[in-house]
Amino acid sequence: MAKMNMLHAINSALDISMAEHPQACIFGEDVGYFGGVFRATSGLQEKYGKHRVFNTPLTEQGILGFANGLAAFGAPALAEIQFADYIFPAFDQIVNESAKFRYRSGNEFNVGNLTIRTPYGGGIAGGLYHSQSPEAYFAHTPGLKLVVPRNPYQAKGLLRACIKDDNPVIFFEPKRLYRASVGEVPEEDYSIEIGKAEVVKEGNDITVLAWGAQMEIIEQAAQKAEEAGISCEIIDLRSILPWDAETLINSVTKTGRLVISHEAPITNGFGAEIAATIQKECFLHLESPIERVCGLDTPYPLALEKEYVPDALKVFEAIKKSVEF
Image (cartoon, rainbow, N blue to C red; front, side, top):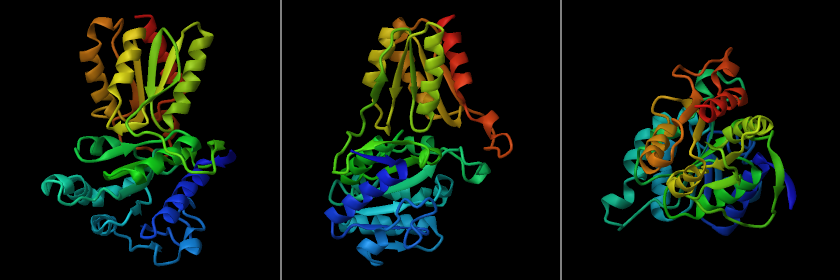
C-alpha cells in the first residue's frame, strides 16, 4: 500500500488504464502538459504522448461529441469536464447520444468505452459556477451510470471499474477532497463493484446515508450522536445510477429511521428518490419520517458557503429529531 491523496489515486487509475489499452485517450481542457486544473492528469502526456493525452478547445459539447465518436469506434474515451458546472453545454450529447447509443441500435453499436470525469461540489470557495452538484439531472437518464467516491481507495477502485464497464459512466469527483483526503491505496490494479453501497459502520438506532464528500460530514455527525447515546448505521451509496436499494432497505428495516444528506439543493435532489423508495418498501418499519439534510434551493453562494452546505451539526440535529420523534 502507498499513501495517496485522491488526486494521486485517480492519476494511478488513469495511468493503469492508459497502459492497458493502447488506443485509450485522455482529453479535455488543459489536461495535457498542464495536467488539468487540479493536476489529476499530471505526467500522463509525457508518458503516453500528445496523440493520446491532449487538450481540447473550450467546448464541452465538442468534447462529448468527440468522446462519443471515439468510444463508438471502440477506443476507451476518458473525457474530462473541467468542472461539473461546465457539463451543461454537453447535456444533449450525454443524455441524447451517450445514454441512448446502444438502445437505439438494438445493441448493434454502443459507446460503452466512455468515461466522463468531472469535479463536483463545494469547499473551495468557488461560488456559483464552480461548486454545483448536478448528479440528479443525470440520474433521470436511463443508459448512464453515475459513480461518486469518498476517499482515495474508493476513487481508484471505482474509477477502474468505470473505465472497464461496458456502459457510459459519469464519475463525479469531490473536489474538496482532492488533496484533503489521504489514505492507503494499493499501487497495483483493483476494482470496486459499481452499484453496490457500502455499510461503513453498523448501528442500531438510525441509518445515515450520503455519498462523496458528504460522507465525512455524516461521519462527524454520527460521532456526535454516538456521544449522545445514539447508535448510527452509516452507509456510503457510492453509485447513484444504478443505486443499491437493497442494502438501504435492509438497514432501515433494522433501524426504523433514515437521514439522507447531499450537497445538491433539496428539491428534486437524488435524496428525494431514495426517500420515496424507502417510504414504500419500509413503510411498516419506519419509526419516524425520513429526514433530508441538503443544500438550499438557491444558487450556490460565495460569501455564505458555510451556511449553504449541510454540515455535521445540521445532520446531528436531524438525527436527534428523528430519534426523538
